[in-house]
Length: 83
Image (cartoon, rainbow, N blue to C red):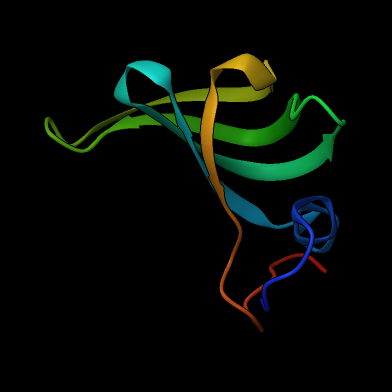
């Protein structure tokens, strides 16, 4: 995806798999179904994973509070799954 306004990038990523990095070195991967101006995110098919221990926990549907979000990585351009 090309650089642009952050909300535009998130809008383009709706329905796609995204990686969300949170405070405390936590990472969640899931399909982005919605977001708001505070960066609160709704993810489905979500899983939290720990790269160090190579473990993951299925979370299904989650709402991530924007205060905890450090980074949201949308899929590479042309790789938007489900759209």
